[in-house]
Length: 227
Image 1 (cartoon, rainbow, N blue to C red):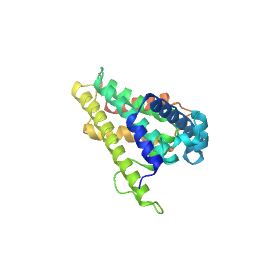
Image 2: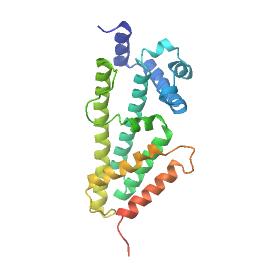
Image 3: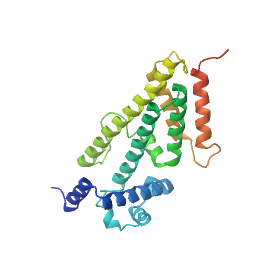
Image 4: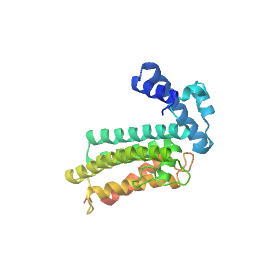
């Protein structure tokens, strides 16, 4: 049976009035900052509540646990990334120009949302297949399964948009490859996402410099040879 706080949380989410949305925005921003500074394990709801200017009891109108809050923050970022690449796909420019924009936007997102988005990538929360983790209660496992299903859909949407960008480039002559648009898109996403293994915002190369290098690698490899 749902608890009173659970029912009230659902009712508040359905209403989504100005106060609810304003507080949720503050909470998401504070959580993103704390996750970035302290990581998932080091972050505490007390610190997040304090940063958001809310008392801890108020947090439970918006989230059930720290993990639930982390999922909400990550999902917001993934949604933003999908919206960004779809905007690029629908915008002006050649396929090569759009591919460069997409690479820069994704790398920039990894930097701005470090490290919690990288934790998501490293844990592969968006992979297909049943979740099995020892000690996890059935309800908790089911919640993660539902979340993964949503993220798989978002991942598919991102891939579809990038695939369209590559296909456009092959059609307009700004790109050339013996591979299919889908394989090129998978390769680009994999190359940028693998940066979770080594990228640090304070490292020797910035996200923009890395994106410049990745773009040059891709376009030199599949760009049309001139002369």
